[in-house]
Amino acid sequence: ASRRMVYVITHRGLEPAGSDGAWGESTVEAFEAQLRRGFGLEFDPNPCFDGWVVWHDGEMLRLTNGVDQRRLVDIPLREVAGRQFGRGCVGTLDEVLSLIAEHGSAAAPSAMHLKGERQSAVLIDL
Image (cartoon, rainbow, N blue to C red; front, top):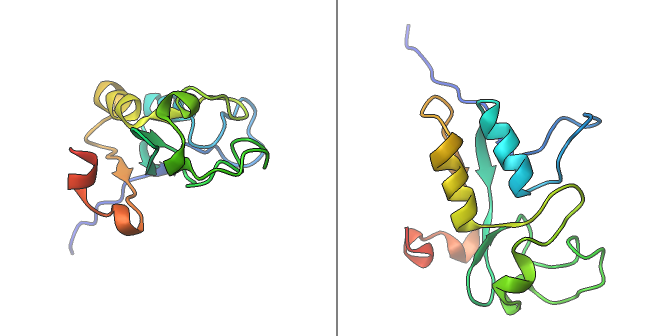
């Protein structure tokens, strides 16, 4: 019989629905909490005007409750990184990669989800 490897990763750092103390989706705090619990992460890097943030949406609508209609790619990094979202802050790609390096484990690898035209490691200079 072949041995199958199954890794448990958390989707955008989310806790199960209704969990007490759950951090906001795709926040630095959510990612760090899950890594410290021994889980890997699934996360979505998205480009800003002058850098990369880890955010699951290319629009600012959810981040600003629909007030800011700009696309993420048109907004400077300084306006997005560290922005509060629910319970937690939006992080840069470098911040999330540093968390994985510090708290991650080979037993629970993480997955960077590059979408559409961003499906090239060259674009994010890894």
